[in-house]
Length: 76
Image 1 (spheres, rainbow, N blue to C red):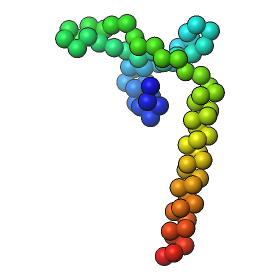
Image 2: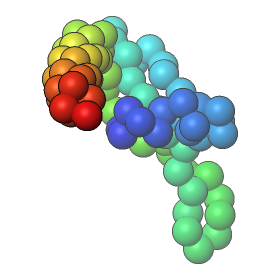
Image 3: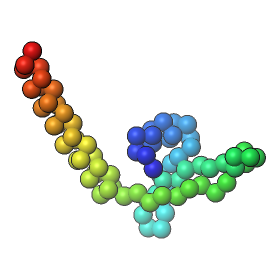
């Protein structure tokens, strides 16, 4: 699942987080392209450790970008 799309898909009611097999998963609605009839949802495991690790990675990247912006602004 593309994490960037989660909020929009959740708002559109096409994905949700569910309990699955002692853990958690994304359940994404799927439809038959030809008939439009709903099919079994796509299930993809998700866990807080993976999400937390991704969040830390992105926060580190933002910190680096902020530093670059500050260096550029200092040259003005």
